[in-house]
Image (cartoon, rainbow, N blue to C red; front, side, top):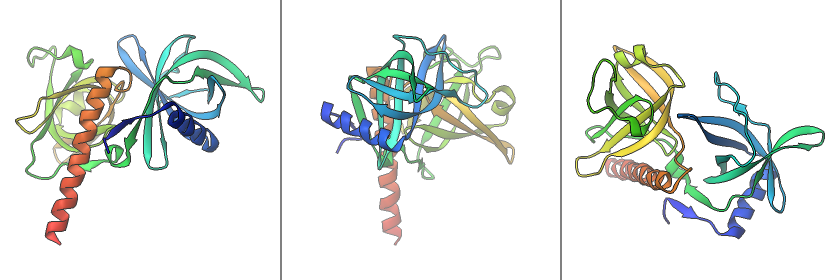
Length: 252
């Protein structure tokens, strides 16, 4: 089974109705100027042509995004053993049981992701997995490292389809703020092509003179190229899970 599977119309309907029955948490991702913004909500009900979502709230510390009619937003949620991603069009505010809700159109496409792809996988010792990152977006990679446009590098310790952790030197912790948009370049081995993605810095944890940074991937479900990158990341995660299971079996 592929890491990401395209769903039929009937499968999309089944996933949406299952999510609405459980009012599962939903993440919306939108482009705001030169950065990605994520909001939290949940799926309340599914109609013939529209979905109703709880009014979204911003991620901690971020301003609330004002959704406008015809705006496009990435939508993702987890249901049972899979994660689902799609893109929806905003209709506007509506009311449900006298409470304001957000109305969106049915998605035209949806993909289902295997469980292990969004479960975090550790990078085994001795395996090359490095990251470079800079302020801005993946398209803003500086031509070289400079005081004005620094590029930090580090070793990837674990990764999932949702994000990754990297160990780097303490200078990154001093220069970067949580919530900052970042462009990242990931390299796994010497024969593979580097992966470029947009990300958001989610946490900073100094430890023994080094720093652990946690990044969240953003915007990967918004375009065909983004979904191709997500497929590549997901395949890498699945490969790492299999490697860990295989080496654990050999030790046993």
